[in-house]
Image (cartoon, rainbow, N blue to C red; front, side):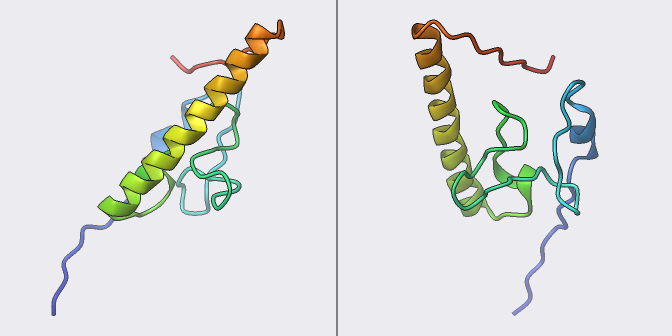
Length: 97
């Protein structure tokens, strides 16, 4: 059997997306998930999430599963920010331009 596959390269532009925060990367320059098993999709910057092949080489099925996990992390983060706002606490979330 012969299998052909295209090599996957990380986007090096991700290194300069954030001015005030440093997004941690793996040794291969993919976005690092500090605790991938328990918090898939979370990055080293609170409120910034990653999905799919931005965090490493994955096939289509794994990319879809990873995206679903990242969406769950985003929903939990937004709920915690919303709950804090309802309680009168303030949280600032900076979004890159």
